[in-house]
Amino acid sequence: MALAESQDPSLIDALSARVGVEHVLTDEASRVLYAQDVYTKSIPAMAVVRPGTLEELSGVVAAVTAAGHAVVPRGGGMSYTRGYVPQETGTVIVDMQRMNRVLEINADDMYVTVECGCTWKELSEALEGSGLRTTYWGTLSGIHATVGGGLSQNSIFWGSARFGTAADAVIGLEVVLADGTVVKTGAGAQVNGSPFFRHYGPDLTGLFTADAGALGFKTVATLRLIPVREHRDALSFDFDDHSSLIRAMSEIARAEIADEVFGFDPYLSSVRLQRESLMSDVKKLAGVLKSGKGVVGAIRDGAKVAMAGRRFMDGVDFSMHVMIEEKSAAALETSIAEARRICVAAGAKEIENSIPKIIRANPFTPLNNMVGPRGERWVPIHTLLPHSKAQAVMDKTYAVFEDHAGELEEHGIGTGFLFAAVSTNAFVLEPVFFTPDALNEIHREYVEDSVLEKLPGFEENAEAAAVTAKLRQALIDLYEQEGGIHMQIGKSYPYRSGLHRDSLALVEKIKQAVDPACRVNPGALGLDD
Image: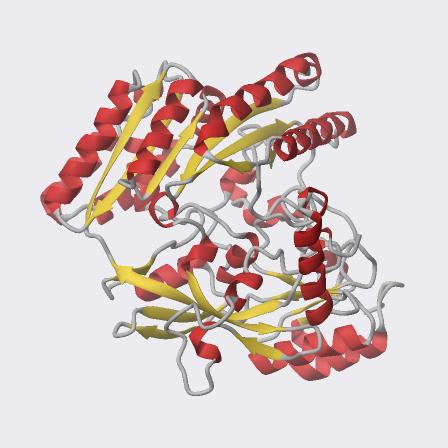
């Protein structure tokens, strides 16, 4: 096969010799697909390399950087901030998904060690029946999203309202640096030790989390285990406005009574209902039945969901969904009562809890939500804020949309919001655009064919895409001004420009120490600007 002009034939041969020619992809389709994320399609990769062992990964990284090429880690490809999207020609992308083994489940010392190409779904399945789980146990995209990707991006969802982010769950790492050196962190770095504890001297583990892959290649991660909490229930509420919803979500988060708490504005709720099919509901109902505690509980929960259908969302404005897991029935009853009290006091009306029931029973579903109900491009942006700022920043976000309402209407761009809480101290605002624009290869790779074939879809729409990009940047600028921070910083959020000078200088010195030629994911965190 002929190589593209940017390719280095001698390097391709060396990589093929190291990992096997079948694991070095140089065809155009692969080079294009692996180099794009959910939002951005830019420069194709020179090649995609799929190592299967630590030794292969170390050799690949060393060979690529020695040849002067950029090398970028890629997990499941579920991000939208250009984290692994190349910014220069000749980039080699390392697809980590062959390194997906669960290496050790240690019930005595309460940790699990996995290769970083393992998906959150695969990890969850490996722990099934053990009575154990990780504190944070994945994102909704965990059918494809990997542990390493989640740690690089610092993802949230499952367990986040009680236990925080992916980075909060990890207690040790093995990392391949730019020259192929392998570094261990935490207690596992002790020459006679095991990875049972995160803190042993300076917290080196923290350096390599939320780094957008800028500092090295996470190859093995050890996560803390806790007992599964068998007593579960969920609540859903309808709020008249976003102010009361935000107030109630913050209070529930501060009370530390929920594992997950999230909400939708009316537009995003309607979008979810439009793009889900009746057959999808039936499949998800089966999941509810399987997840019920005992035959009676399963039948009861399944019957409630079936009877409610989708009518329970008629007339709902801002919906909030709370999932609670406790160690005892009494503790669950107490937490449910407290969540209900908080929401009712905020003026909410309780509605059928079908949405959290179905989501909890089917935690890792196909990624059909990557597109809108008519095949629109799904384009999110987000910020994390202290609870005290969430309301004011939400008002200012609405003001941005109102200022550009004419453009949004002219180009048929829909906007919605997802709200979430992270532990006791952070609130997430995630504005979402639905842009009538052509889908890329990544959407056709991950969205089910049975869904795609029913969507009318859109031709390329440069004007609508430009309006979306402009408003997306306006929100990024707003959140920087308001002191908001971000997960999956990638190459999109203003980490470099928004950091205190001396703090940035230290980060730059760390980057220089581990990657002096800036060959590992150049552009990530803005560290090569």
